[in-house]
Amino acid sequence: MSVNLSENLNKVLSSIPEKVKLVAVSKTKPIENIEVLYETGQRIFGENRVEELVEKHESLPKDIEWHMIGHLQSKKTKKIAPFISLIHSIDSFKLLVEINKEAKKNERIISCLLQFHIAKEKAKYGFSETEGLEIIESEEFKKLENVSIAGVMGMATFTKDEEVVRKEFKTLKRISEKLLVISPDSKTVSMGMSGDYSIAIEEGSSMVRVGSTIFGSRN
Image (cartoon, rainbow, N blue to C red):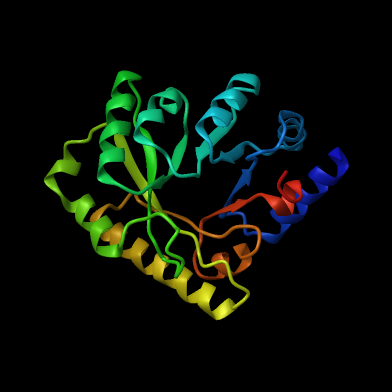
């Protein structure tokens, strides 16, 4: 098992440019698996459930950079505010306000990505282009001193049609360029998962979220 995990990680790393960050998506995977990847040198891990994230943070080395990649309920923010490195899934202004409040209590500035709805599927969370950019330009947002918008995140439609996926990634990249004009530090473009990360990189991704290609299929 451990040999496979390390091999899989190294295969993914060798397939992405150095400037692209790899988030190893460890959701549902046991702590032992994360330890193997940690020993191999991986330091960025992504989780989509708050309880699991907190539990893993408590059990594993403290130099791990934890990313919250799943939908986050405002009321659960306080559980991860003391340690979270990056929240990928900001899909409402209300959530930003809550994160700012909890970050302030912890004397931290929490980095966040605005999640944009780029897929055809209705089930995906995220802002429309107009909503997201309006928030960043709003006076209300400027009062939030304990959150920092590091960039954008999006998920493409789950389809074998490469053209659809490519078009959606192009949309997110275009939104990210507009955001950069308003907010010059918002450089991260988090797009691409196990099935489509090479296309995402071709379309300008700077951060990919890879789970099953490293860990094997989900439990």
